[in-house]
Length: 143
Image 1 (cartoon, rainbow, N blue to C red):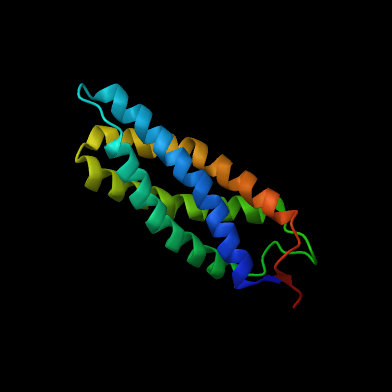
Image 2 (spheres, helix red, strand yellow):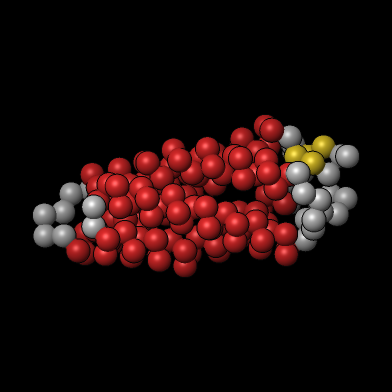
């Protein structure tokens, strides 16, 4: 079973909406707790830059994983495949978050905190997103 490009696009959009909210909330709480003159522009810019960069990266991550048959059964995907996809995505995503947060805030302490919190909940969010999408048959093509 392979997935169509349209499925990858829709999956990318759905995940990045959740990811944008996650990144914004984490950035909001980290920066607001560490700043005397807080406004929501820095968390918004962090989330927006991350949203754009991760949208592109997520789509290609999906397409690359589509090349590998590991963990695919007829119409199902084993949990270990979802876990490995979550780990590889988290590596790419955390790198993007680090660079984006550092660029936006110029504050290493805030950046580290944002990345650490995002790692802690990002793998779980990704894994759940994968498992939900594994129940949706739309956009799957038989080999």
